[in-house]
Length: 509
Ligand code: CO
Image (tube, rainbow, N blue to C red; front, side, top):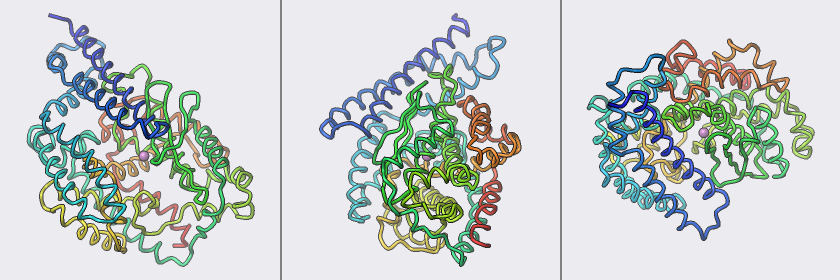
């Protein structure tokens, strides 16, 4: 019989091939969003689906299943520490997910979501939910089937069906825990949002829609990304309609953004956000590339990094103490006579709004909780897709005190459901809470962050994140990772404390 070491090496070798192929897919996906001429779209779809099929095959071969099973019961070689176990845990998780789903269901989901996305684009443009309703019905039915095939939350029939979907994005997360922490967060946020809405002190946001030339925006955003430590030797920044970050592998991480010459925050904070994702990708251990634990811990942890650099760093007083004079020089027409305090207040404007992606730091999480509740009810069969618009509007009225007048600014605004991505939304709010808790610990660990930021020194924070989060990849499930670093299970309190400390003074509360 082959030695444990030989089996392990065969597993890693096979896994690495799948990850390499997946990175080729990523590369083509990046090209599709940035430089692909429109005429090449159909050919690109053929290339992508061929690769997707090969990757799927590579990760579902019976031999891979045999290797995982054999290693699970084998005597572990001395000195293998926790890495072998972590790789096995992740390999098992992925393999089971991929092999439990019948091929028919996977193909049907791919076909339906591709058509549904096209229909969603049209339905949103026309703000016509009825156009999208049949597609949402099909998708919800298929996702319920998927959850059942995966065996509910823990794979053996325990836990809510929704947990099986959530687990795809946030390994190990349970909807009951998420619901509990969201409820605590909501209880603290709603009064804060109301108080801010009633404040008489308001920032002048018109300064942000003055003329900001595109070339200067691009240079400034690049300079800021480089300052926080994003390496342009190992990455690039391009334009795309929807901003994203794609880590191709060691030494190659791609960011994108979009520019609006009459809206400063979009591109600037967008680039800081994507660069935060990029620092995570660039901070992964290159030697672990291609192993099951060689990637980011979860979407929630990924988002914690982007939101930390975007909001906790990029929208702080200290950050602008360093960068504001540069901004004034680059955008002298728009900002030449604007005091730093007024600019700081404007980029931290808080007001209830309909569109999630434009929401501020305080109201953002309420948008997520609404989607989380609705999609749980859809998967559990308590809410019919036809009743989504009414339920959506009622939730907005209750949580944010505003009611969408049309579905384009209500339940049709996000792409996720049309793409079959149910279970994804909670990771955004979890990311904000992870960010706050990690940032609080970083403050204690690396000294006066504000003083460092004010000098333009971001090395201590970045190094701390690299050592404690990035380098570890997927060695720990997200909840455990945060508990290991901060000494506490995830709590809503650090985020609430951060928001109060920052926004009460800003709004004179
Ligand atoms: Co993000």
